[in-house]
Length: 149
Image 1 (spheres, rainbow, N blue to C red):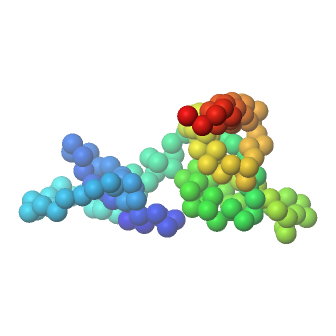
Image 2 (cartoon, rainbow, N blue to C red):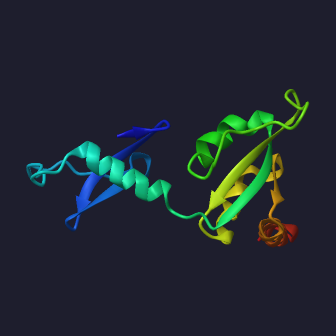
Image 3 (cartoon, rainbow, N blue to C red):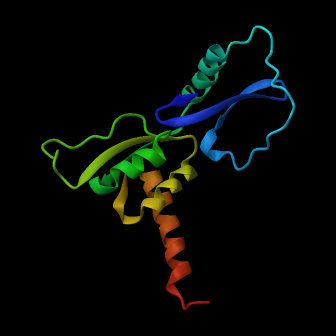
C-alpha cells in the first residue's frame, strides 16, 4: 500500500495484522511457502484500521521549527510522518529564506531527529524542545572540540 509517497507492507505477525514501512525492510527471502490469507479479511479494511492506529496515536510533543527554504524538500521527505500540516511562510515572507514547520513527536527526546539538519533548522518552540536540541548540540561540540583521537 502507498500513502504520501511511502510504501507499506501489510502482513500478519503472530496472527495479528501489522504495518511495515517498505523502505525499512533490511532483507527478504523468497520461499516456496504459499501465501495464507485469513478468511473474511480484506486488505483495504486492514489497511484502514492500521492507518488509523498510526494516525490516531497521540503526539505528546508539538514542535514548531523553521528550516531554510533550500532544505525544505529534503525535510518534507525525511520528516513526513512527524509533520502535522503543510509547511508555511510568515506574513509577507513568501520569498524569504525560512519556512515554518509544525511537527509532533511521541516523546521529547525524539526531537533530536532534527539535529541532522544542522544549522539549516531551528526549533522555535516549545522551550523544552529547544533545551534538548541545545544539550545535544553541546554534547556533540564537546566530542569534536578536542584533538583528533
